[in-house]
Amino acid sequence: MNSVSLTYKAEDESHGELAAKLRCGEFSGRGSAWFNISQVEEFAQSIGRYPIEADSAPLLESGFWKDDGTLDQVHFRIQIKPIGQRGMLSASVQLAATEMSTGVSSEIRVEFPVIYGDLARFQSSLLSHLNGQATEAILEQSLS
Image (cartoon, rainbow, N blue to C red; front, side, top):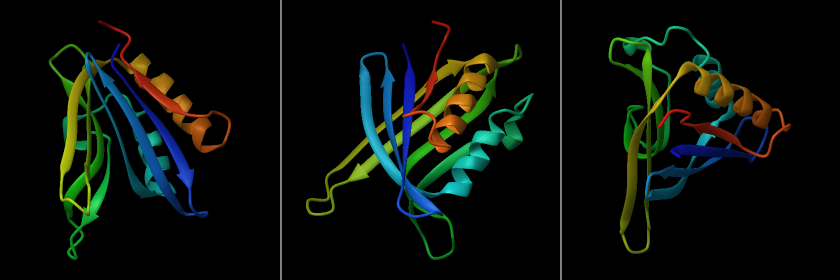
């Protein structure tokens, strides 16, 4: 079953580290990035919209930023976007890391189909996790 599980660990009241475990078929990976809690809360709200439109697809991403405010190196990205004409959605997840001492990079990027029910469960678990009521938030593909 394809899934991504998220765990947010606050460093202070406004920001913290979001860690992810990703499983997609035989592939798996782990990664993390730093986020302002408001970004994660805003993403949690955005995945509850219906319908999700391509031009405003929910996106949460972080990594190393340039001085002009654009993302230079992605460490974590998740985006939910519509696919096809029948109301299907796609969860696109990218995790990456670079070992600073060696310069060795690792990356996993997967995409799997989800439905609005999967997003509703994910939204609920993410909000519960951010409120301290759940140990993690999970987006899991219900259809195979």
